[in-house]
Image (cartoon, rainbow, N blue to C red; front, side, top):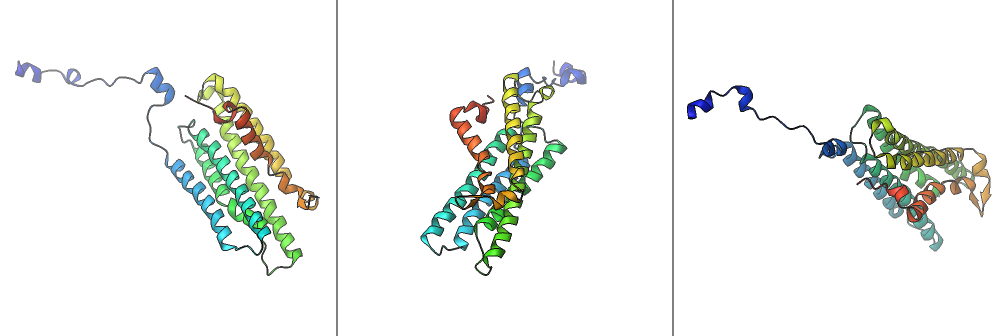
Length: 239
């Protein structure tokens, strides 16, 4: 009997590996977390830390400055945490790191990394400068931040567009419409943010604050109000 077993043909000794079941093919199976996502979490966390360090490095000179600095940090915090929430949701649906997705990831992380620096240039004025020089620096820094925020929104809108393509079958047909709506919403908000770069929006003020700064709030309001009123339109439950 033992001798007969050793004479089996090689094809009879090799176990056939079963093909993936339809469910495994649909979900992609278990796969390790891409390194770019780990790096993204690190950069988002560092950007938040830099924002808090900037507060420590600029001690307030009055009680009014304490409130102003806290509000400025809160805005930075919500910009970064909102972008991170949307980003992590989209990356959970994009299991394949294509060249385009990789380049967009790199561009997004670069824009995220400089958010605290640009906002600090808008909010904190150097005491060594006269009011006219401070205004010039704040104007320029605010223009760069508007471009930065608009770029972040455009990249996130591109991610939503890729996911919404029916031929890629990255999500169920029921979720395609949600991602398309998200793409359209972020594209409109990106255009609005980019329009705020125009010099007139720095010259025009409301309650002593340039109109440009008010135009930075719609993306946050859109996400958090939408998440409260219609959670399914912002959280995209994929399970």
